[in-house]
Amino acid sequence: MAEIVDARGLSCPEPVLLTLEAIKKLGKGEIEILVDTDTSKENVSRAANSMGWQVVTVEQEGTAYKIKIKKD
Amino acid sequence: MEALKNFFATRTGIIVVGLIIGVLAPFLQFLGNPPNMGICVACMERDIAGALGLHRAAVVQYMRPEILGFVIGAFFSALAFKEFRPRGGSAPFVRFILGIFAMIGALVFLGCPWRTLLRLAGGDGNAIFGLLGLIFGIWVGTRFLKAGYSLGRTQTASSKAAGLVFPFLMFGLLVLLLIDPQPEGEPRGMLLFYSLKGPGSMHAPLLISLGAGLLIGLLAQRSRFCTMGAFRDLLLFKQGHLFAGVAAFFVAALITNLILGQFNAGFEKQPIAHTMQLWNFLGMTLAGLAFTLAGGCPGRQLFMSGEGDGDAAIFASGMIIGAAIAHNFGLASSPQGIGPNGAVATIIGLIVCVIIGLTMRRR
Picture 1 (spheres, each protein chain N blue to C red):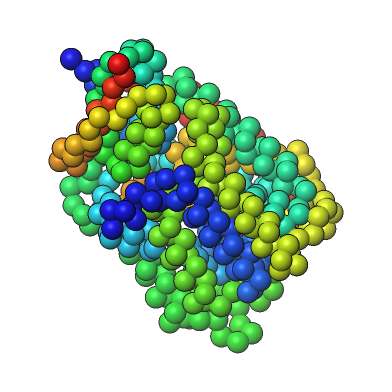
Picture 2: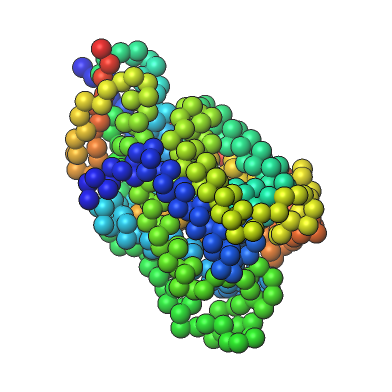
């Protein structure tokens, strides 16, 4: 079961902060991050990559994006 | 379209945007804008407040087309790339207050983060203190963010119309500017106020200013160019993506100024600047903190308002009202130094921002 971070509606840089907190907490595994702007989608993906996590999928769900990242 | 969309999200993309804005700004100065003020979001919003008669400082009144272009350009860009999303409701009145104090801080220093860098790129050494203050203010803001500061979630607006209001207001102001130009040698058109001397009387030709504003609005909306975020992300995450764009902006402006003969190094008698370094530092500390707490530099707030972000529109409106307050009550600086009430307003602003930083928390 992936950890879920709901960052919808939050201003910059909160979505990235919450993502990095979850990455720090888990160390490895799978995280799903919900965001609702393209800016947050790009920022979260960039931050995950910089921490050595891989962006697996980005799915659109209504007005939001679900970003799945993982590290083995 | 998709390839273009992705390009601007890359490191190269934001550097290209920074370079373009960095060349355009000194050229706007070359074509008539005030010195080291090719683009200054705070100063230009202040001039708009003057054009509307919200303050009566006769030397800073002009409906700056660049600002109108920023919002309208970002609006069309957001529409074209399907990123227009009306939203709002994240502590709007707190954002309004942050906008007021961001402007007051900027007018104590005499420039927003964009002009801080343009002043440096023009050789104005006083801007070093402004830049240090800006970075310090942003650093203080990052401490609040790390401790859980948040203005809460925005809501998607139930109607598209909610996001159209601010871009349409800017469009209306543009129409007003076009139908109510400055009568030769007169300080007032039918409605709009105009400066006869001082920075407000200095401007590039209208269509060039508007074109540059539209282009910058489009490019910055795509790339998320943000002069505050650049330092914030470095301090908070050690991420240099936005910083690369801002560094490119500075380098391009410096080189363009050297080529155009607009570089004059020194501290004394720099254009539209004062040498009271403590207040240069603290003014920008206040502005940097307010921008960080509001989630974007003054330019970025305009670009987001073009995307339909009502909270960003409220922050920008706060800045325009802040300019009126600053000039009506002697808070704004001049080349002679800070205004009679500039120091106390800066301190009050810092206290208010710290209280906001401490009390607004993620639940």
